Amino acid sequence: MGRLYIEELSLSHFRSHRAARLELDGRPVAIYGANGAGKTNILEAVSLLSPGRGLRRAAPDEIGHKSVGVGWKIRADLVSLHQMHELETWAEPGSARTVRVDGKSAPQVALGRIARVVWLIPAMDRLWIEAPEGRRRFLDRMVMSFEPRHAEAVLAYEKAMRDRNRLLKDMVRDAHWYDALEAQMADQGAVIMTNRLNALERLARAQDGAETAFPAAHLTLKASDDLPLPVERDDLLAAYADTRPRDMHAGRTLIGPHRADLTAVYTAKDVAADQCSTGEQKALLISLILANGRALAEDFGAAPIFLLDEVAAHLDANRRAALYHEIGALGAQAFMTGTGPELFAELDGRAARYEVSEEGGSSLLKEIL
Image (cartoon, rainbow, N blue to C red; front, side, top):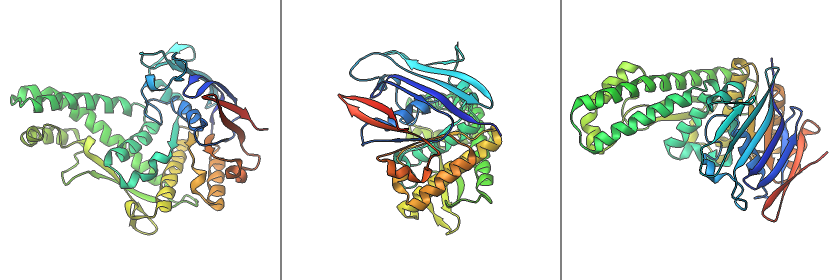
C-alpha cells in the first residue's frame, strides 16, 4: 500500500494568512487556536489541491487576504504513491484559478489524478435534515474522490440543462430546439447516475465488516419528490421528452440527476438519519468519511488526505481515540482543527502540532515541538 501526504505546504496572501509554511512528515496534523484565528483557512487551502471550489465553495476573488488586495497562492510538495509532485494553484484579482502540476499548466481535474482529498466540516452537521442539494453535493464530492472526471459530467449536464430551462421559460414548443440539448443531458446524466451508484456500492463494501467505533449507514439514492429517477441514457431521454409540457409550465426541468436525494439509515437501529440524535448524525457522517477513506485506499492505492474541521469538539475522549486510531490504521494524513491542545491528547506523539493565533488582522502559525 502506498501513501499520499503533503510534505510541505506554503500559503501566500491566502485568507487571513499573509504567509504560512508547514513542513510535514506524513503524520496527522493537529491545528489548534481560538475561534477566528485562521485554522479552517489552512484546511481550505489543502482542499483546493483537489478539483472544484474547495470546502467553502468560494470564488477565487473571495479568497485573497483582504488588507492587501493582491492575488493569493498555494504551493505544496505532495508524495503520491512513491512519487513526488509539486502542486501550485493561485488566482490574481479578477481572474480564474490557475493550476500548475510539476511546473506545467494543468486543468483542475489533473489534481484529482494525483491527490485525493475528503473533508468534514461543521456546516455538514445538518446534512440529513436540510435540503437535498447539500446531500447531492456531499455525495458528488465522494464520487469525485473515486472518479475525478465526474465533475466534468456534472458541469456539462448543468450547462445543457440551463439552456433547456431557457427554452422552457420562453415557451418554445418546437421539439427540434430541445432534441440536441436533451441528448446531451441524457448522455451526461447517465454518466452521473452510474458514477453515483458505483460510489454507493463502494462505500457499502467499505462499511461491511469494518471494525469501527462509528455506526454504519445504509445509503440509497432516490428522487427528491415522487417522480421517477431514471438511470439509463434512453430512459432519461424519454423522460425529458415526455415531461416537456409539465416542465414548460414550471419553467424548469423537474426530472433527472439534479433531482436526486441521498438517504441514510442507521443500520444497527434501522432508523433514518434525519430521525437520529445530533450525536448519531455526526457519528454517521464520520463513518461515511472513514468508509470513503477505506474504499479509496483499496481503489487508489493510498488513503486520501482527510480534512476534519472541529471534529474533535463533538466527540468524547473514547470516540476521539477511536477516530485517531482509524486514521492511523489507514496510514492517512489528516488535518484536524480544534480550539485547544487537549482535544488531541489521545494522539500522543502521533501528530504534528501547530498553534494558530491572530495578530493585527493576520494569522500567525507556530509549530509546537
